[in-house]
Length: 245
Image 1: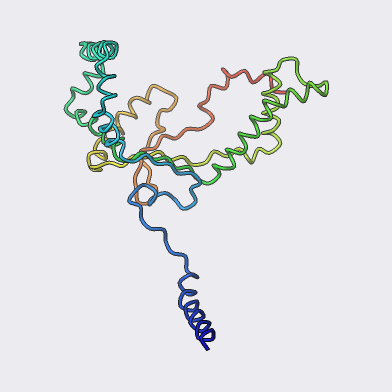
Image 2: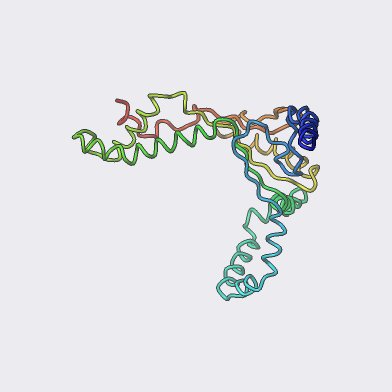
């Protein structure tokens, strides 16, 4: 009778648990950038509370001893002299009232959270590069054992790399890469980023990248984007003629 009641109790518990187990629960919020990373991201890394870490290191005896070393003080003095020079463009740039917030903004960006996320295809790209490196390192050795290969070892390695890529060119895919920072005051960052539009356009006006910067919408957010493609690579400077065969 006791065993019978026990089996009924277990069955009732399973019936209560089963409907909940059938529905996958959303992962709990972390309060970090992980909450905003796409679900198909294959790599995520985050450095948290770097500001507190640096402050803690600054209070240690080891840091105080290192900072008071004559060689370190001499280097710091030399850096200050270089910064305070009248012809220093960085000093003139930061003297502009519009740029005074930039040092504090940069420090804030690295103080809270710095993260890196890579999208779908990251593991495939890593596997491909490992295969290419292995082939480039060991391929010439096996070719010599078979009495084949190129007299120039460097040329032999590059030929093996190119042949491997030519066999499966569809595997050469660069995944999306996102590098971001968590800020205390996002409004200040937005104001500074808007100032980049004309500055970047002016800087690119005398380069082949003229007109390549623009504002784009991704989801609910707006980004300043710089579009690049293979036509901007200096192909004429690359020694590809010796591998065209």
